[in-house]
Length: 407
Image 1: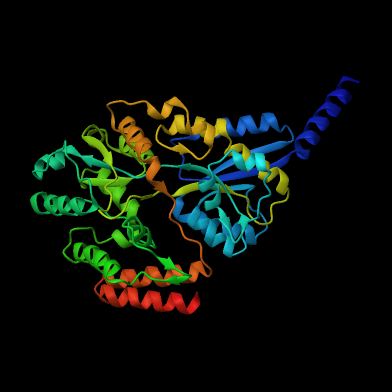
Image 2 (image 1 turned 45 degrees about the horizontal axis):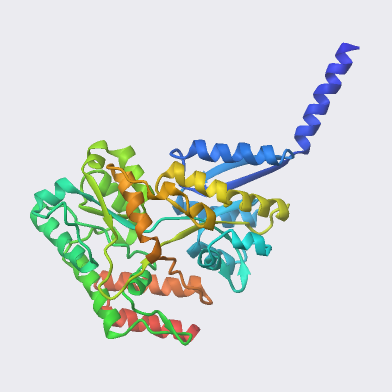
């Protein structure tokens, strides 16, 4: 009799387990630094939703789009996926994201400007999560060797370029890696107060746009910025800085933790300064991370519940406290006193500096039809200008012509 009862109990347990809904969510490059926090979120969601078995998968930034498109095509997408606004526009155009249905109360949790960033073609295709205004981590040892004052870092992009030249001339090391790979020159223009679109037409081939692009072409041509700037961008910059071979790192403050992890000596020599503004601009492009629900999820309501859970007030604040350097996109969490706490180490400095820059932060990602095609035209021509295959003016003229034929 006991044997029969035991068998029945085991069958009941396995049946209950089999009836649980299997779900997973994907993040971008958070492992292994934030494993504990992600595992806490899994446990908490499973506790609140006993019928769910939740799995967390971390994906490298370079692989996330292709991996997601493959999963959607195979009919096995995650319930929620961490993407930035640029990816949201692209993936939405490709029909890879489910529109969300939010109540007014749910919408009010988030800052209006962060929520609207994930609104593509009048569809809410994501919920905002974290963001961090850029700061500049700089190596005080390299500053001293180059004859620069470590207590007086550059305050404008123009003086940053001058400091980068001085670092290279005096030490042989690179001064900085500008964020100009891909379509990022578009953000550089906007940070300088220069428009991209007017009246639905592209207008970024004015003499001012050409002059600004030419400054970066000259830096590249004269080997003041690394050869793989256009190919590996931020990844190359972080590697160079962590190995003590870069004077200044333009970064979200959360990445200073990587430096701490990779090289204690460089971290010890690091100070953090505000992101240098263009003389004509007063805005800092701040990429926003969010969670979207991919096309083809089996239980859309539960998937949306998961996305709302991951981005709610309590969890956004908890995530910021663990990263020590990211900021919430929800109204209530952003008022927490944690964000005003200082400290002498580079991570604490980064958080404090970034908190003062939030008022200038804006996700400058633009939404326009055929974004994937137009962005490729932009990227290819900027790369041609940097490589000396076209003049800066010809490159911008060609992009604007192609864009306006499409727009």
